[in-house]
Image (cartoon, rainbow over all chains, first blue to last red; front, side, top):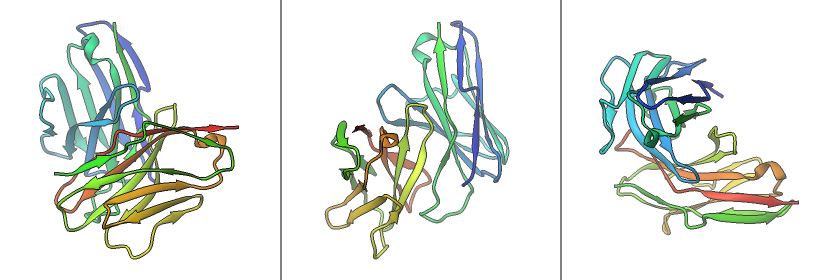
Length: 118
Length: 114
């Protein structure tokens, strides 16, 4: 199956710093990538939908200035958590799909990034 | 609006036994796809099985099968011959014809007991 690489897998940073998380589709072109946030033992919460070459679409309640998403190419999307604070500590996971319209087109997920803000 | 409900926060099963994980959904879309994903403690999401709303037969993938009852709006996952490696979180998800995104349930934590 298709492979999505997410980096880093974990990061610890000081409050006030910015953290960038990369999501790459390794063997396919991802026209759409999704960024999720997951709290311990909870479901995935969609943060934003990233389309190559256009601005990301953010879900209600997600601060676009806080969580900057860039989808500069068909194989790379980045999520930057700006001025991170302890409440931003969470598991962030990206996913991608190849771009077809079939209902059976599944999402391929990265391995996730555990962010801890001190 | 789409909604996925998983009512079992945690399940236990004896090794080699079968287990059913429940999933119900609600949608107004005429066509939709239903998915199950497995999330081990390492965090990655692993695709298990897919069922289309117009598929005549229940989907099967190895030890995984989907008990799809359209009238009841349920899509339960059946894992046969459970293995210790099946211990993980399991998420039911849906994608409708009108949208781009997937909607996930709250997940079921499965523990396989040796």
